[in-house]
Amino acid sequence: MEKLHPSGAVVCEGKYDKIKLSRLVDCPIITTDGFGVFKDPEKIALLRHFAKNGGIIILTDSDSAGFRIRGYIKGAVPKGTVKNVYIPEILGKEKRKPKPSAEGKLGVEGVPEEIIRKAFETAGVCGEEPRPGKKVERADLYSDGLYGGKNSSEKRGELLKKLGLPTNLSVSGLLDVINASVAFEEYKKLISEM
Image (cartoon, rainbow, N blue to C red):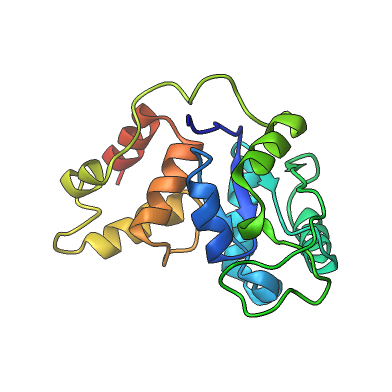
């Protein structure tokens, strides 16, 4: 089945949600680590960056915790940069868990893929086509000295500072940010200015 192409970065609660969503969407996926986002200024900085550069799409569980996380994120990023995708309330428990959640509802990880796909389509957050243009690949980072070489970590930190992002972002995180917020040519221009 073809992946969806949301018009922004998707924000979900945990790693199992991210695993599920990575099979369905072609875009950056950021986890809040549950309520961990409340005490993580670097995660908030990352969310603000994505919000300003294409917007964010929040897909949390349909329980009170999920709505609390949505509200917190909405208040932490610029107005008008958040779109919401909601999954229906489905009672049950995830296969990997020994018992249901406190409210007895399935989270994103437990909801069938076709329901999540429908939720994205209903919210109107998917473009018809993937983003045009060449994407920055890991090999580009390597050839530009940002990955796998002497002082690559420092160079990566310099680029992250130029982009206004936390300097300890992983290589994968950097690729997600670059491909969501700058064109390949703009990336090359930033590298030439370093």
